[in-house]
Amino acid sequence: MEEKENPLVSNCNFMDVRPAMASMPYPPIKAECKNPNYANLLKIDYCGAVSEMSAITQYINNENRLSLEMCQMAKIILGIAMAEMMHLQKLGEMICLLGGNIDYMIRLNNGRQKMWTPQYLSIPQNLNEMIKADIEAEKAAINQYMAHIKMINDKYINAVLSRIIVDEEYHIMLLNALGHN
Image 1 (tube, helix red, strand yellow):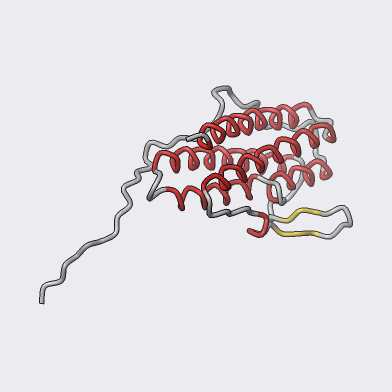
Image 2 (spheres, rainbow, N blue to C red):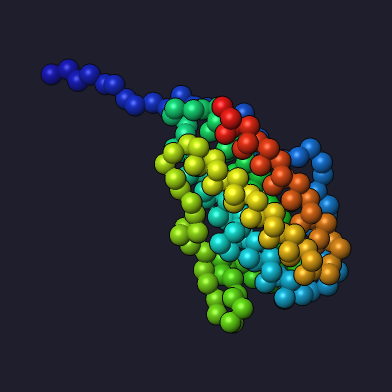
């Protein structure tokens, strides 16, 4: 008996996708001195509720769900996720320079620790709600970075955080353009 083969195929090719980042260089990864308190603040940006880890995971989920029906949009979302991966890597380097440890745990104000969880994510099914959730997450990240810049007295660390904010603002612009399609 002859079997008919009719495989399901994704035709969205991601080979040309690049990180969605502002076209300006990043400052060198440096710190004035070791500072575990600053490392703990950066760990919130690394893997807290509002964090690069949360952003990457949320964007990859969105990209996967869009790729079959809206390939171009999925490529933009993947480019944003790739930029967030670069941010995660830079934060990780700074945490280590400051004497911190990369373990996906943040230290809460009461001294307890909390591990990153996918419960931090917003995963709506509706496209417009998805874009809206991503924009809100970018705005929350900018606000958190700005608050951390005020709390950190290290010009090198703050220069990198300020540069990350530029990318987050660029992501909001891209997402706003997607939301109007």
